[in-house]
Length: 230
Image 1 (cartoon, one colour):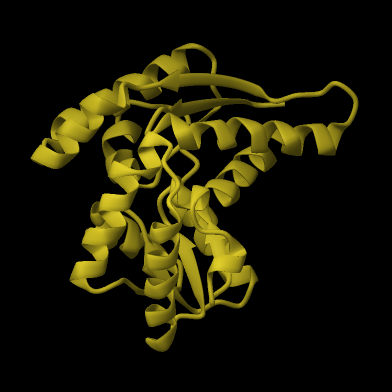
Image 2 (cartoon, one colour):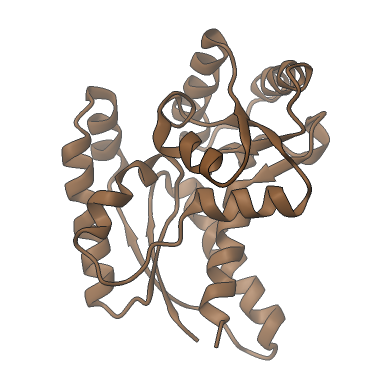
């Protein structure tokens, strides 16, 4: 079994499902008392968020690369970034590594294509929804991507940082997300990507008029599969 190096804490609320899902898959696959080989580096999210909000992505890249290198030195075979937004820094990180990063957008695109989805709605932080580092990765994988209108992007982002990252689940926010998904369906979306690892804490399959693709579940499952490959 390979060792997975998880970079978590962005936020820690969504890091917990990663640990659980990976271990559940390993247990189901191998049986008995088997569990995953995991090394976790949990960052201080307030520092990360400050860099994001001030546009200091260079400092974000330094923090992420440092975490990845430490996991590599500790014996990790793969790096798993337990968040969507910070995949923006993958090029900075790979420049310092000799082990692969399991990319969340690639795993997600693969799952959508398996389900026959060609046009997907993307929800996430404002960075994920408006910048190209994530959307273009999906497009390069053969998907058409639609994002919400400007006001809805602001609402989605505010709920992520002001509620979900703080462990707050509000029914009103669930309803608002559902309404946004309905609008994206009207634009032709065939499925919705929960492109922030916290959104799966709020939006369930029954809350969406579109098939839901939870990137936390997809990414964690892909990491477990790669750890178990011969």
